[in-house]
Image (cartoon, rainbow, N blue to C red; front, side):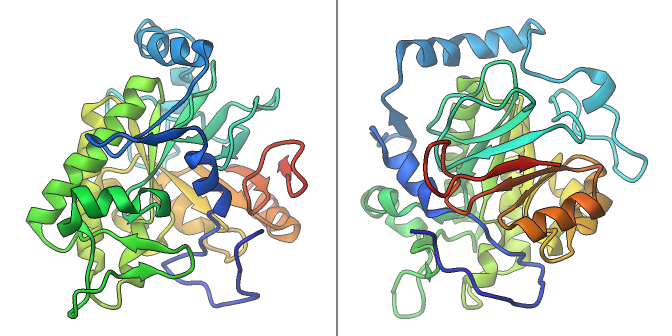
Length: 322
């Protein structure tokens, strides 16, 4: 059942959040949380496991999977140069958002985003989805038993919850908690690199807007900087996920490109394009919003997906590119 989505609201820096409930379901299939990293270890086929081992080697050898320098390494004049040593997504290329359930990409697809528990798609530019600022519901027991002090709590000691997604916020309010959390999330980022992904997409950058004043924008920016450093050290590019308020300082934080949900719906795509040029991956969840994004920002990578981010054959499945 699709999550409740408000009929209308004013655009804001927090941006509309189109993440799907199926994301948690897809990640929970066939795996368990690694107590050392908090990283789901799915049951993979032998082929997928072999691909995860071979992909980093192939990338180092210049094999398929990373775009050529003619597209990815030449940002538009409005976008400052990206971090040296990481591969960027091909600008304006067809994109698919598969964070709910992975499936064989469409023939035209060149960029795909998948959950960190899934294998990357062979021969494409792969973005690794990580819920970096909140706790997945199916991983909450692991957080409570392993890192209870890293969950955000109010003055009465109650966990602070993002009620729309039933996710407890993690505590990025101090240098000490940020450093500890950077090790946890950093382990997931390292896992993305080891599995053969090209980039990482840390979600819920805007969790501070749902913290009841316990976190602020500076906390988010500081923690995101630590994640960017970890990603770059692992050889991965890193995307700013939503939050137009942080877009002007995104390059300073260390972000290399953007993943923007529903910026067409809220007429916010310019904020990301101003910061990252054509290196913006846009997801829209309704036909009229998709049409608006395609018409207003044809130079960006825009995909129409269903809110459940489901696979072909499922009833709500929707996919289209401009």
